[in-house]
Picture (cartoon, rainbow, N blue to C red):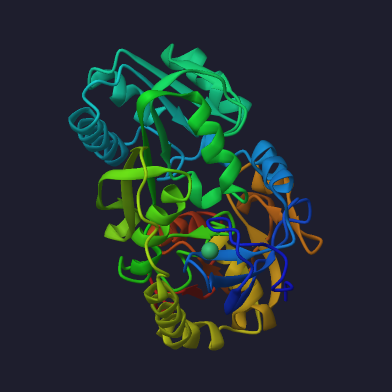
Length: 391
Ligand SMILES: [Zn+2]
């Protein structure tokens, strides 16, 4: 368990954490950030956050070495799938409506530039990407001729009319330096757009239990705690609303957005409702049938799909009692990693015999089962949502 005193509230600076649950992610052996964190809420402002011994510098190293953001095809990497183009088009139109006089826009944490290209299409004169991952920046230069700067949220240089932080703030250990840097890079009258997961709505998008609790999401915002963060830095909210990011199989992550401009604004009262919402969410996670399916798994099994969700279940559910025969993943980056000394293998490189396999990614289980069948596997298949099942 992480000591609850390790991190002050990143929104208000107070140190009055209220423990919700200790989480243990079984991270890669080379991972520079701690896998054991406490999910807490701030007794002063109500923000949810991870109390962790890891510092911003550890997370910076984590993102620099993590290949996911340059290669991923799923939501959250700023990519170009049909669903993402639709989502980014809607965001670009929304920004065009609310920030009419903005010409230069910077997307901080632009990933593979999906939103950036839609901002250009929506009529912003100049759209510039910023990303700490050099592969993402290189990709933008090579493939789309988009302007991009290799920098992080506190080192980029530019004078923008609109700064976009879409799915960035939930990843940041030190929020105050980020907002102070934004103030310095923003033109007079400029806007900040923020979009984050809505922690008050966790569990309401049809995702499997604990799926919302990514290792990387160190802050868990409600509308009031997001507005309070900006009010403390003399930004007022000029527009806000709810949205969602769609995952696979129709599941979704409920999200919040807000547009902020310089100006004084009252700091909202402590948001006690977020603590209660997160406590209810965790209670529902513990009572979900998935936990029984995990309890009923055979003692020895293979695991296919080493996601952050799988890492959390490996460390914090009945899965930690299981004897893993091996870990499988088709991602070449993950195939270079180990967890507690156990290598992550390419499926074609191992002999599976007729042993049990747990497929952690429900959305892909049919294609994974087909893949296993082709490799000669005829043993039992298990999924998190249905337990033992047959294709
Ligand atoms: Zn606080």
